[in-house]
Image 1 (cartoon, rainbow, N blue to C red):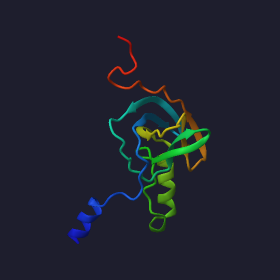
Image 2 (tube, rainbow, N blue to C red; image 1 turned 90 degrees about the horizontal axis):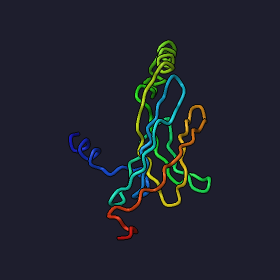
Image 3 (cartoon, helix red, strand yellow; image 1 turned 90 degrees about the vertical axis):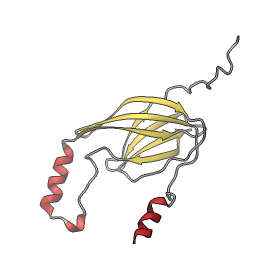
Length: 149
């Protein structure tokens, strides 16, 4: 049993994004059902890692030419349903739903930006609504490349 647990945690994740060096950290706020983008900061990594994908109600999508190029799933703290449908009463399900309606939470999502990504959006898979995200311009390469002396 112990070997199974160790192997489970050391096994590579099955669902990964494509390796990229550009990303956007998107700060989001959920306030009683309203999703807003608070801040977007673009960054660049020295090498191109792949990001792990998780499960979640929401999807942060990198878009290019109107098509999704990459996405990561996420949830806000206290917003994900914790109840197991076949193991709870109707009253418990209703209580959980009412509790989540009053949640105000924030999170930061790191969205990989593949080549060609010109825009982004946050998509709520429950309500099927998307909130646009304005990406800041690309950061210039480090080391002053392209500057005159």
